[in-house]
Structure formats: structure tokens, C-alpha cells
Image (cartoon, rainbow, N blue to C red; front, top):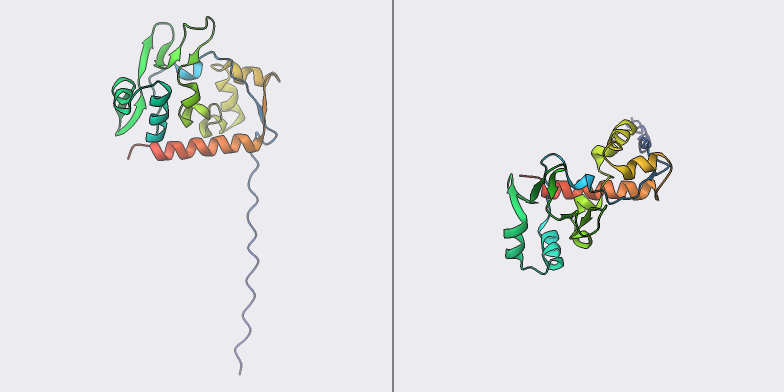
Length: 174
């Protein structure tokens, strides 16, 4: 007696991933309204490299930047907020005065990943219903629902959501 030949392993097929509801892309163009940078108290965590970039953009030393613009929240650094009547807790880099009718970021070229990836955050992409709810506060999303604005591919959206998740993981309180 020889031992019977073992049964061949069934081929492991990757499970097909569920296609996201936004598989054909989403339309969104920032309207510079500032709604994503204000509202209820919140946090904009940033990594040390992002802090250095913002400091450089403001022509400040790291010490000056952290002293003037950062706060510790649950052991991690976040940008400070300013309470603005009629708006709420604005990111302190939100500039509502230099361009009337627009809300601009004073560190736009060096803003943290959390800001760059808006509105393609996993929480906002969770369902079409959540996306549509966000349109109530974001004219860029609202316009997109009307077919107005830049069409972002599913690949771009997934990459921004992935980068936002990485940034959240890297800056999450430990």
C-alpha cells in the first residue's frame, strides 16, 4: 500500500470586491465657501512633516508655528480654532476677509492631508445617503449632485479616501 494522492487544493480565488456606490466617479468642485473648515468644535490632526510645511508656508520656525497655531488634543497635535459669530469654530487659517464672498485657506499649498482629501473621507463615502446629507452643508457636493463640477474618477476617490485613512491612523491618539 501506497498512501492515496492528496486531493488538490481548490484554487483560491480572490473574492470579488463589492463595487462602491461611487464606482462611476463623483462630481465635486470646491466653491470656497469654508463650510468644511467651520462648524462644531473639531480637530484637524496633522503629522510633524505637515507641521513643518505649514510653518515654512507661514515663514515661521517650528517653535513659533506650534506655539501660535497648534494645540494638543488627546496626545496629538491639531490646528487651533477660532470662534466666529455666525459660523462656529473656524480653523484659524480660514480667511473670510481678504476675498469678499470667499473663504480661503492661508496655508492652502501646505494644508494637511485631512483637508486635501475632503470630501472623499471614508465617513462621507459610506453611502449615497451620507453623501447627499453632506450636500446640505457643502455647495461643492450639492452642485455635483446637479451634474456641475469636476468629475473625480473612482480611482482618485479611492486614493484620497485611502490617504485620509492613513493620515487618520498616523495621527490618531494613542
